[in-house]
Each structure stands twice: as structure tokens, then as C-alpha cells.
Image 1: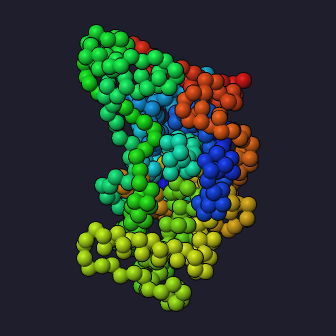
Image 2: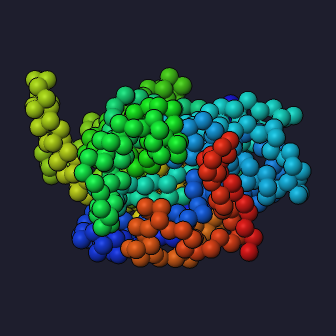
Image 3: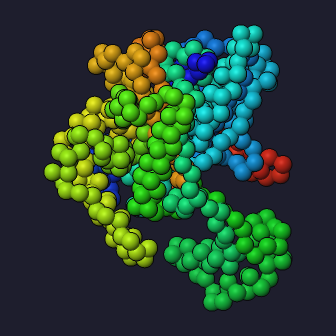
Length: 518
């Protein structure tokens, strides 16, 4: 079998952040609950000139420069994102445009001409999907065709102001260097998958009627002290064919409503947590079945996977998500082992599933199971397990927040860099990785730590870079969130920047980027 995997990882995060103490004060929230309960310390906030494309391009540039890669040798760059900038034109093409600007003087204006790019979207698991397919592609490489691929992840996790998800916001972009004989992590071709069509979190196209648009404008005018005549909305709607609204092109084609896309999602947090737990557990079971078929694991001889895996890397929409969600897999993987009676002695037997399929009975049982999982998470057995295998992955998440598609890879970087600082001996150790995307899908796979991992991780300086960011206040935060901030809070320097968005004609909505050196 050919060894393929992750050779290096690069990450870019905004220079701005909101301190969670300030956020808690702003929203009248309990900082202790946000920090001690969810693990939140800060959230990364994109500046005016930053978006999905700039953050992704910055990460790829960091990866190329650090590894001395000739852009002409990169065969593909697949982007996982749920913060795409266009409904048809891939955000990856904007990244390609910026990188071409940056490297064309050295390598020619066609240096990325033969690079295959695409966007992959499945909520937070899109980058794992991009990794999966890129590993398959790299594995088919020959000596004459040494394939080099880059998996990009980039997102702005943005929620409505004052919503229940606002405190989990974050942003950032990253890139994985994929090739044969990797220096960091070998990834075997054994994947567990669980897919279920649910509506736990999604970003629908919202229909807005012309009547509601006019009504809202008039309401805003009244709030601003303007005089609005009675019946003006009805008269405007009646004369729409020749109205100013039609001439401006908002409803130019005669429709009575338009579709509007927003970055802020529709979501049910508790339902999404249950979907997360179920999907990861089912994907874990599917992974174990595939491992048995491949003779990678003998359940009669080998210990549990969660015992074999020295580190477990998970998707973290907030820092303590894995700590709170993994007890279900911990229970499933250990309930028939000698240690489980000790757990039962502390918290009792798990609640029995009702025979009835009545929704009320099922909901009551699920609530009992949620309480049982919380009880598991407080046992010494689980707390020790979490400290040894999961905790290091949540450290960077506490300082950045949710990265959507990149959260699992941020946890990977956080783990490796923390282990480097601790001088851990990881060579040859197995990592278990669990990705999740709402909608919903989970993938479980594993990686074997390569002998040269230290030399790779030493170049990241993740936590050192996080210490150099700029904190923002409430007014700046809300202006950025609402799109009211006209100038960048920190002027772009040594980075890619969004400089223009076309307003009309064939260039309407077209985004222009530029490298800002000074």
C-alpha cells in the first residue's frame, strides 16, 4: 500500500478578536459559563478587507513559502467551505487569482494554469471531504508523476446578533499539504461514514416580497423622523411596473419576491448536538466494521479503538464540544469491558429505551440520555481519558472560536504543537479523527504519526502568533458584523485584501483582490 497523508499544515486567522469577557459584559451573559462551561476565551473576527478567499489564500501562501513549493507542481487545490462567496463561481478561483498575482513574477503568469480547483460544501465537514478525495488522488501518483495536492479550508462562522449561537463565532483559513510519504501524518484508506438527511443547521435561500421591502423601508424612515403618508406602501406596490424600485433593478424582472442568502444560519442547537452524537457514534461503528474487513483490527485480540488512539481529534464548533459529546462513544466503546462496572457503580445503569415510539416517550428518554452522558463526563475514568487524549486539541479553539470546516484541523494543529512543547513521543502513534457536518454527515478515520513530525510542527508557531492579535470593542464588533465599518480596523499590510466589489453591469458582484505589501 502507498503511504499518503498530511505533510504540513498552515493556518491564517484574522488579526482582530473579541475577548469573551467583553462579549459577556456586552450581552449580559455569565462569563464563567462561557469560559468554564464551554471553554471560550476569544473569537476571531474578520476585518473589512478579509473574507473566505483572502484567509484561504494567506494560508496557502504560508504553506508554499514554508515548503519551497513550485506552484507549477501543485496538481489540485480543493476548498472545503460553507462560506462561499458566489453561487456559481468557486471561491477557490478567487484564491487562485490572488496566488497567481503573488507568484507570477517568479514562476510565470500561467504558474497555476494546470491546477485543478473546486469548492466542496457539506457544512462543517466539507474540508474533510476534500481531504478524503485528495488522498485518493495522491495515492495514484507514480514516480514520474509525484502528485502534490493542497486542501484548503476557510470560513467565517457568523451568527445573528444576540442569538444563542453568537458566542460560538470565529473565523479563519488553512491549508493541508497532501502527498505520498508525508512527514506529519499518514492516513490509511479506512473511513467510517454516517449520513442522515436532517435540518439541524442550514443556510436557506430566504424569499423576500417587494411589499415587505417597501414596508421595512417606510418603517425605518418613520423611526428616523421622516413623515410617511398613509397608504403609501399600497400605492407603490400598485404602480410597481413604472416605479423607482423597478428602475433600480431590485425587482427588475417583474417578480413579486426575490431570494436572499445570508451568512447567518437557521439552527437548533440541542437538536444539532444530538445529530452530532448519533452521527459520530454511527460513523465510529462503521469504521470498526471496515477495519475488521481490512484486517486492520481484530476485536478478539486488540483493545478498543479509543484506547489505541493516543489522541482524538474532533470537529469543535466550540472548545468543549468534544468533551461534552464524546462520552457517548466512550460508553459505546467500553460498556463491555472490565472497567465499565466501576462507572456503573458511580452513576448507575443507562436509561432503557422505551418500547413505545411515541414522540413524547422518545423525547423524555433522549433527555435522560443527555443527563447520563453528562454523568459519564464527570467520572474519573472519563476525565482522565479526556485529559490524555482530547484536551490539547481544544486549546486553540478557545482562542479562535468556530472555524466550521477548519475546526478539526485547528484541533490537530493545537494537539501537535502542545505535544511538541511537552516533548511527547508520538512517532508511530495513532490518532483518531472525527469530522462532522450538519445536514448531517460524520466521517471517522485515523492517522499514524510520521517520524519527522517534530520538524514540521516546529515551523507553525500557532500560539505565539495568536498572542499578537488586536482586541476590538463592542461598537467596532457590531459595525463589522452589520457591514457598517467602512475602513479596515487594522490596515492590511503583508497580506491579500479585498479592494472592490463590482456594482453594476457584467461586473456586478465581481470581487477584486490585491496583495498589499506595505
